[in-house]
Image 1 (cartoon, one colour):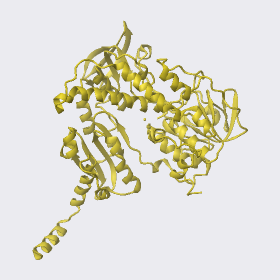
Image 2 (spheres, helix red, strand yellow; image 1 turned 90 degrees about the vertical axis):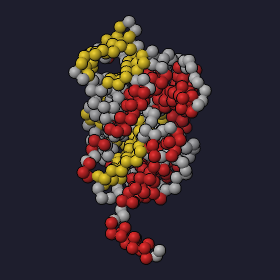
Image 3 (cartoon, rainbow, N blue to C red; image 1 turned 180 degrees about the horizontal axis):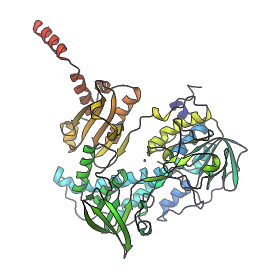
Image 4 (tube, rainbow, N blue to C red; image 1 turned 135 degrees about the vertical axis):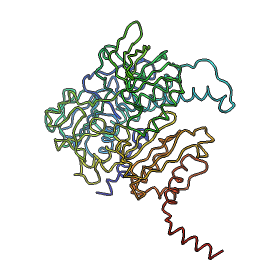
Length: 540
């Protein structure tokens, strides 16, 4: 049984059909709200969005007749729910999957997939403008076609959709129900007028954008990540509330497309969860891209009139105001726990979401919860990792599963340059308890050749050892590279082990080996140096 339930074994046995897509398995987190069972209309109503809808919420979908009892009922078909359902079905369990809105959740529809398509397009626009000055390339003039950028986004998203769609999961032997889910007891859920009895259930309903309690904000009907990708015309000006990953990624993108972008941030600096030096590099790059940054801001009111939104705020003791054609709120998320009947199910929750123990079990021992609805790590890859642990925890009494504390979860902000981090949050690191090694990217040959020299690699080690407490990497492609450090931490190997990896030359990843070499040189004690010195003199 233990061999059967290894991570690879689980994935390889899913349905015995097509493997789960890499995007499904490894992509910030599903959103599934629970208030409206009608099939949503995707805007704009074009061929690509109709193709997307045909998979993620088919207009003509008919729910199956509920089985007498399910081994597992999964509520929410974002990453956490999809992976959980697929793994359980692949192991032979009778599984029901419920989604009220769009299968694929936030990641496919309004998160990772569309945002990264947007980021790639904006980077290409920026590179076209800078090719002449930086590389002697041709001069680019004029304006780009923003509508073509968004059409490409919708086309690519629709092309990815089938792997997350209702027909695909039905083909895996899963009963897919579209509609509102509500617990009507400790072991049953109602959807579409049918009652689904279960042995175990997983809540994976995710989270949604939160609106700060600012007078006039809700009435101004701001954009959030759930509506931003509906745009077909570039706003001439854009104000963004929030300087976390979503806010900064979109600020840089829209500035590079040509919008006049202003960021209003309540915190004293950008990216408050990340390394301060890393945040400073990103802040400086956004300013170079034309973004106006305001930190330590208190927004006092918002008003929408005559096609513009005006925000009044204080910063540095001064009262100011800014007006823009569009407003985007990227200032936090709230869990989707409303109207689920959690009280009836005996599931405890609070404003942060569903409360779970280390094995993702709720106060109702039959019910588990993973993903944004219960986790402090609001990333798609975290939801995927939790799904791999929760299924054996729920179905096989923990055999082959695991605890949340066993996960080593990195995160990345996909600005240019990218900032990737793993381990303890910088704010939780006490300098007197760690040894810190920092290597600048301007000494990395590939960074020099690429013109990517503003970043660095910083690793914090447990005092007197090479045990990695945390690491931050700032450079283009940092998100793709941080996995090498994650893997070492997961295996329990220290920084010194990275010196054994041979990297092709020239690569940015060679910076990991240089950091390990610096640590190893520091281990050479004065006594050892004298012994070696004596040896070499004697053998001269």
